[in-house]
Amino acid sequence: MNTEKKIISNFMWRFAERSGAQVVSFIVSIVLARILLPEDYGTIALVTVFTSILQVFVDSGLGTALIQKKDADDLDFSSVFYFNFVVCLILYAGMFIASPYIALFYNDITLTSVIRVLSLTIVISGVKGIQQAYVSRNMLFKRFFYSTIGGTIFSAFLGIGMAYAGLGVWALVAQQLSNTAIDTIILWITVKWRPRKAFSWKRLRTLLTFGWKLLISALLDTSYNNLRNLIIGKLYSSADLAFYNQGDKFPKVIVTNINTSIDSVLLPTMSSAQDDKERVKQMTRRAIKTSTYVMAPLMMGLAFCAEPIVRIVLTDKWLPCVPFLQIFCFSLSFWPVHTSNLQAINAMGRSDIFLKLEIIKKVLGILALIITVMCFSSPIAIAMTGVFTGVISCFINAYPNKRLINYSYKEQVEDILPSFFISIAMFICISLLANLKVGIVYLLIIQVLAGIIVYLTLSLIFKLRPFIKILNIILKREKVL
Image 1 (tube, rainbow, N blue to C red):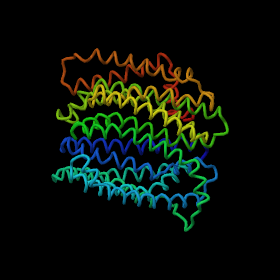
Image 2: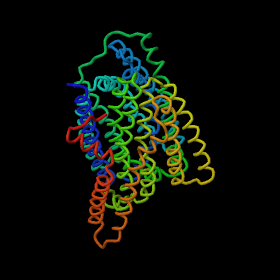
Image 3: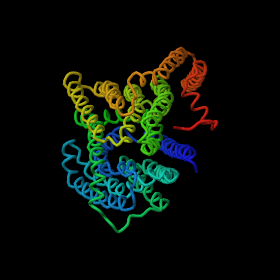
Image 4: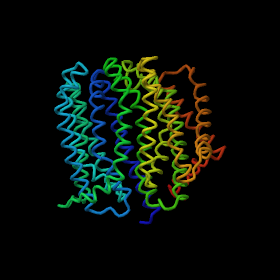
């Protein structure tokens, strides 16, 4: 298979995997949200704060280092595998010991057992992590499809069954744990790579030279992203935290699906062309243009239709999550711009710059959060800080690429503005339909269809390059990157 066909094939498999998993997970989350109480979700959200931070160590930045390294071999992969697994065992032991103290911090003794069980995902991920890096490096994304879909479907049946049995928060625990376990088992069966009985500190140190900066960057990012959860969980109720997280979940279903598909293919493809700055620049531009073209109308439409969607899908008990959902839609619409710029930096081998950017962004974000808590303390105000820091971070992430790949601010703004302008026009058009005297379900369907028609029509009238690009890819007239 030639390079062009390989890129297209792997992008489609990755997109199919993410789409399938997100659709199933989304449906399951709707069913569970209708059965369980917001407080159950709040409990899981508190525990996930800690497991998400520890999950960063599973990769330790070494997975990305293996993908980026031109001549990575079995000894590199085996060394990282054993190192990661030992680290995961140590991390789980730490969580097991710390769980009573975390429960005491939140004044909820039931958290102890939930933390100890759910933290097992860290150990399981230690087995899976390097298999994932191997799949990404060798562009075998069909394997991700099988493992992810298998794990998602199995955990869906288990979680829903336990929820109907009245097991409450343990239905969510079982769903997450079984998803990771089945995903790992299927990946281990379908991917033929196995660790050798060999280990090299020299190879590991070389990879850590690149990877430790990404580890610190990821720790900063994950810790910062979960800081709001920690604050809301401590200062407010578990229900408030559940509404906050539910508002975040809806737009992330869309954003993560698209972003992960682009992200997975972009890094190995860019890394293979890292000696050609112009080639990397063109790939970055195309990724930003295309992802913004897709993301902007989806986020704007979801924000506008937030209340009827929540009423129809989750029932009225979840209505307090609507303002959070609208806030996150705006903030997350910039994610593909962040990802494309950061992946270009990684592909050029500049993890040192990546780390510096994370430190700058997190210092700025923490200062904004401290000011918000002191002056405007409320869950809504805390969520709003993400919008402010998200916009500023776009400029921070783009700055190094002015020099690394000659991609200026002016060019980046020119690449994203057309999609945002026609998204605003679409928003105005569908808002005019809000007063139609029809049922809420019919109104939502009419607005969605009208939004699609208006957006595609404007794209055709103004001949937006991403629209032509996507059309040509569908018709197989043009490369993905």
